[in-house]
Length: 171
Image (cartoon, rainbow, N blue to C red; front, side, top):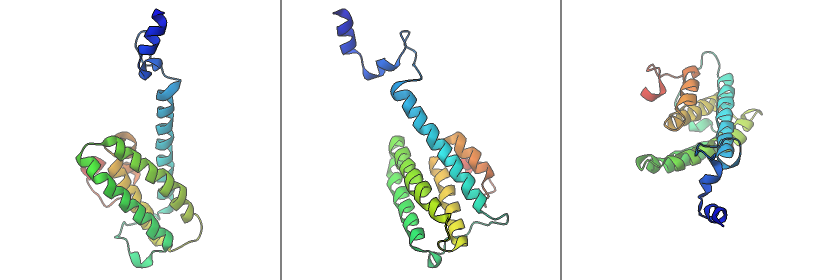
């Protein structure tokens, strides 16, 4: 009976701890969450590699010219603007869980799964798509930096920005 009582009073987190109270890695919620974000970091890194491969050696970031947008360009800019607007209040309120969730959903499902795939086929103006790819990657790295500082800094160091400050934290 004592074991049953102890089991019924334990918190859900207790099932992920070893007998000595240390965190057990390899099963349950913790390992699933770590795996999910490891995959996201890998997705971000691969998307960044793709974007940088699309940029010519002499690439210079320029303001976006909406006159050259095709429908998919307008769609991704709209989705990205919507994402950034939604996280502004979350930053003011230090709600990093919502920030990371919204950025995760936008980057994975909209940017990587849809827009990057559209740029692989001949749709729209190539130079415009290069500017959009760069702009979204650069601004996403800035937004993600408080949550994922190490990978965003690593990617930032290889990005062709006009920023001469060097580190993303100073950009």
